Length: 64
Image 1 (cartoon, rainbow, N blue to C red):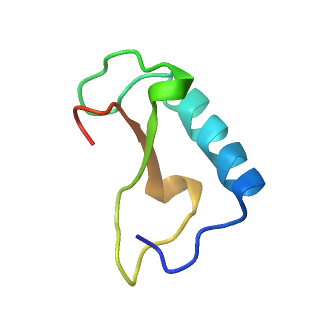
Image 2 (image 1 turned 90 degrees about the vertical axis):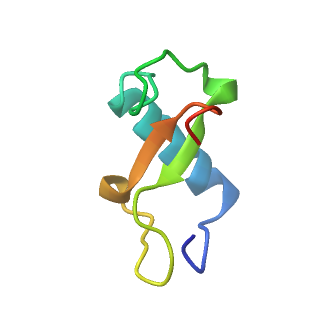
């Protein structure tokens, strides 16, 4: 995970943008994911990770 997570308000806004961008579905299994159940996942994690939209994806709990 990136070293610094943005403030909660920014993080929630990012979650909403990514969830809508991904069609409100898990990008792995394509199952619809409710807002309350969505997991925002970093595609690349660790020291090189970023919180850019291109590095974030929607996953369901099972795939996360």
